[in-house]
Image (cartoon, rainbow, N blue to C red; front, side, top):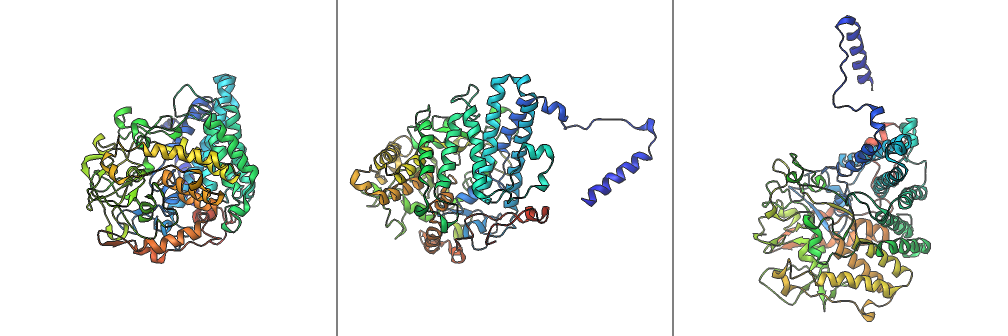
Length: 578
């Protein structure tokens, strides 16, 4: 702060030495006058929407380094353990508050919230006169949705966060707002309040495309909020089946009723969900929108910069080979008589090899989710994966992520030092919401409807072979559950959890699912012990997991970033254990 004051004083002194008639008052360029900005509330709302895509690989808003790397689904990848600061997220034992990635994520999410606060002020002051009462009310609901979206991510990641709303902004009291002003439960009440305001203000459909929030997206978020807190307070000792709030579980069912009756539904082929040409299909309830530079005549397009590291090595000009599926995830796709091998899938490692069919069968979603040597990359035979398509096989093996990339034949989205993709980031897709519904139904002893939902998802998977992965047909076997195979409540719960993993793998939710269920420490520490013994075709990898350990009572939440703790000393408190 002192250096800024010195610069200002020096500048004022210099002006004082300048003759008045020599001074030319030239307004700065690239700056929008405050009064003008607030008088255009619709543009302020557009700016709040635009911030959804203001991501970067060091602060990905889809949270893949935390929801995927922090789980048993995924290894970091890249050019070695020190490539980016994400290695602590995959082993947990060395995680501290100092990684710059955590600080950037915190800061950028609050930048998004700042845009929302400014948009709300603009709507309060000029919304009705500029837009009319109906549109102003709708835009206000949209901004509450967007602000709730950023707060949901902050609360999910960091637990103890400051609540900075438009009143704090107007009073300029951000630096006097502590992060322990509200309890965890009170913060959830505030986030839920954001989505309730959105739900009450928004129509079910909007006229101007899939980029705007609507009532169904708000209902989806309300269901997700209630599902999160229905299991407990986020720490393992007080999370899980012994702490279920049935009233909250019923809220999940109530809000997913709204989604189930809506215009959204299952896209018929699972593979199509992750192709750009289907990115605003009936599967997509709300997604961060992207574009190709050829679509909007810009240099870069509106690319997905969160996923810019995740292209396969050797196929893209700058595919940096991050976000690599684990052997444990591949094992999870094994089937026996068409059903998941829930109890013993991890007992031995296996993987399919093209042209070598054996008795081990697989859920077809494996071939849509994990790129594997000997198989086409994203369905295209002219791009066959080999063991050369990895940067660091001794640490990270040979698998690659498929869901977050387009087909290679579509060409490069951006040619340069980085490879970015015009792939929407799903915030909610229909299947995700239906799995949340099935989870709540099971906990409220409504097993038949939950089984019907899971079977509908499995039937879609069974029908997702011929169009894209006919080459893997002989490897695939998938069946539906029956009343006897779905079993009692405890087994139904395991079926649901396994189905959620198979369906949502590599979509940034796995760690947060494990935490919600109160099983993160047992799952992850068992995973570390097995994954360190992974190998492909005789090449061992994953030995770094020897030093991995997840500590319950500490690691459930990420630490408040060091820079934030000491920006205003004493203002924020740290999460326990760090």
